[in-house]
Amino acid sequence: MDSLFGKNIIITGASSGIGEAIAREAVKVGANIAIAARNIEKLDSIKSELADFESQIVTVKCDVTKQLDCQNLIDTTLSNLGSIDILINNAGITMRAPFEEVKLEVLEEVMNVNYWGAVYCTQAALPQLIKNKGSLVAVSSVTGFKGLPGRTAYASSKFALNGLFESLRMEYMGRGVHTLIACPGFTGSNIRFNARTTDGSLQGETPANESKMDKASDVALDILQAIRDKKDFMLTNKQGKIIYWVNKFFPKFVERRIHKVISQEPNSPILK
Image (cartoon, rainbow, N blue to C red):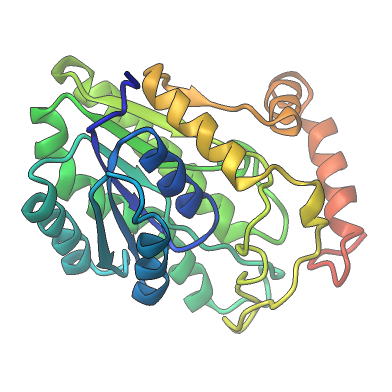
């Protein structure tokens, strides 16, 4: 029997992309899920599509930038599922704009979703995770250990997320809580279409070839396996591994390469 069978899993940002893919893969192995996002209609649609599985599925409308919404997510999960074994902090947004032009509200919004959303949900769920010796997961990014020009707020939020979860790992390792920092590489999803621009409006298109990126379903499988294996850190994307290791020894080389690639994007936010 799969070790995730019967486990109760909360997934934020579950209406699309990696979060939705994790939800779909989790029910296939018999896990119960509470899926959260601002788009409750999409969550209910996903629940209907998964109705043939025997898993319990709870949908919760949740804006992770609001502490009361995050507390409600935890309370609703407990009311419906009885306990919490795994919390996957997946909700996230990005931005693409020159730093000197971007409005400060855009930087704050990205930080509020990507960092504070994880803080609120994690603190609310922690008593249950301690009680059940559960897993605490942050879906971070390669950008969490190497910044990207034009994505200053996104990189800052992911660096902060990594620091938070490294600290939590050490703080609670003696109490049986497993903490995973998952750093996928570029993954095909709608995150770049919804990237905030200088004034906070949505980009509406992607500068990258989405078809060449990792599939969200593959990333979801990697994350679930990393939870089973109680890994501290997950980095399975080939490009991400290269950046991670080469950056340790040749950071200037990596930075020049990244600058070159980003500067050649359509409507690049940085100069060549």
